[in-house]
Each structure stands twice: as structure tokens, then as C-alpha cells.
Amino acid sequence: MFLIQILWVHFKVEQKGLAPALFLDRDGVINIDNGYISEIKDFIFVDGIFEMCRYFKGLNYKIIVVTNQSGIGRGYFSQNKFNVLNKWMSERFIQEGCGLDLILAATADPNDPNVPEAEFFRRKPNPGMIFEAAALLKLDLAKSMLIGDSLRDIEAGNAAGIPNLYLIGGQFGSSLIAESFTDLNQCLLELRRKLNEIP
Ligand SMILES: [Mg+2]
Image (cartoon, rainbow, N blue to C red; front, side, top):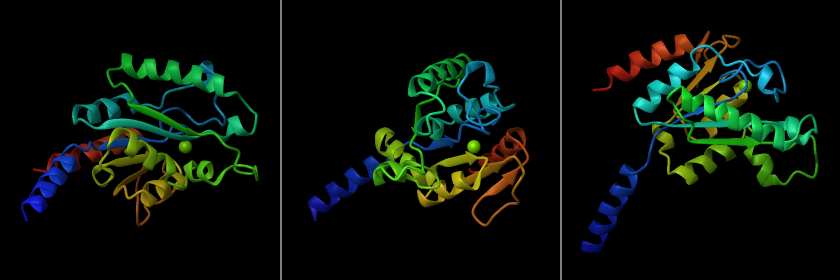
């Protein structure tokens, strides 16, 4: 009985230690999606992204980018080019007072039959990258949120058990599993309203 109590207390402490996260898609959420962006000069931040991240940092959320970057696997641009862009992007977030906690990318070409299953599982709409982030940063996915601009993002979040899924861009109606917003500013307004309701 005593042992069970110890285990239970340990479990509670473990649970308490898990952080919530805001998961972001990159293209179409962080930057305007003009297709296979690999150059700093083509990287235009979406209006409202820094306000969104500052708000969630203030609530002690981890900010995590999960992005499909098959342009690397397809040979359109190199991993090194992607790393250079990431470094620059990360610095911009730090300057704006909302440093990113993790960036994960699925770089395989989905049409390549030699891609290992595990790598394919990382590519959205599969949830692999989200699980990877949860294990690395000890996240509470049940208290986390995800913002995407495509149904692939939403499906990945749903498959990972993230209950709060938001679509921006307005090209889809609200689905059963995601709320839809025209843009990040509208999304943030609604999230602020919602979170303030929580006592
Ligand atoms: Mg996108």
C-alpha cells in the first residue's frame, strides 16, 4: 500500500512537471507560403506571429515548430541552406522576445520508396514529430495547442492527442476537430478570450 502511495505521488509530480506547448507549422503560419522557401530574402513573417508567441511564452508554453520540408528530400535545396534559414529565423524570434524551444523538420521525399518507415511517420499528417518533441521536452500534449494552415497539420495534431487545433487562412471551414480563423490576429483574439475564461 505504501509503495503504491509513493508511486502515485511520483506519478503526480511527473505529471506536474510536464509543460504545455504551442505547436506551429512553419510555411503559412510563421512565414507566407510561396512554396519551398529556402532563402532569407523570401522569408516574410506572417502578421501576428510574434504577438502570438509572446502571449504563449507569457503563459509558460513551449513554442515548437513542426514543419514538412520535403524540398530537401526532393533536392530543391540543401539541409545546410535550411539550417542557415533556421538560425536566422530563431534569432528573429529571440529579438522579438519569444525564443523558439525546438524546430523539427520532416525532410524526406514522400515519393521516395526508400524512405524508412520511421521517417515517413514523422511527416505530417503523421504525428511522429509531435511525439518526438513531447519526449524531448517532456510535454503535456493534452494541454497543448497547434496552429496550422492545412488539414495535414490538423490531422497530425489530432493523431498526437492535442485537443486544441486551430486552422488559419480561412480556406477551410471549421471542421469537427479544428476551429478555423482568417488569420493569426483573429485566432489570438479568440484564444485570449478562451484562456481568460479558465479560472
Ligand atoms: Mg503550412
